[in-house]
Image 1: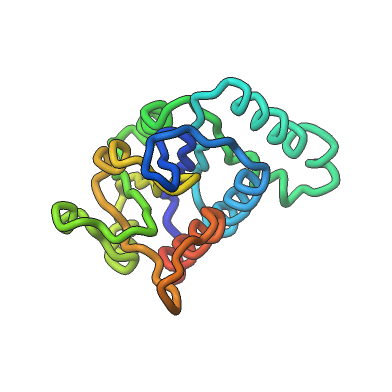
Image 2: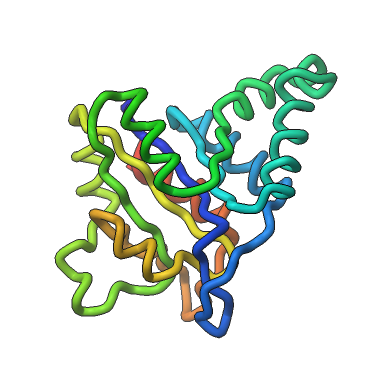
Length: 190
């Protein structure tokens, strides 16, 4: 199992259903479920990115309950998952922490339910190809967006765009928790 994979959950900049850049609220379920999926699949760190002080404070309270408080004593497996959560103000802050920890640049992989446009085709990557790349030494961060997905300005900062998850029909609006679990399983177990 690779030990060079991180996850970042972006709350700003993301888009709403009208494709306007917004900031979104943190949800307790996203904190817990992505942390648990990350722990299950060997993710080294899970970054929650929010520029909103009250949201960061809420994350801190939830994490503290499960890592330092009664929640962690009652449920040690939840504690071990939430210990990997790091709350930062910007995506750049997350990248800086990963680069400092690993002493190398980070390969950034955007996720999106929308297929990349023609201009992004050279950056499109399949789970199979990314899984092969994870066998190397470079650090990688899978970038997920809340609300209706990552804003184009953040996608543009990424080195790759992971192929969207295809369902059985035209409906394609998974929760970010579900998408993170599916992608992690495909990258680790393929």
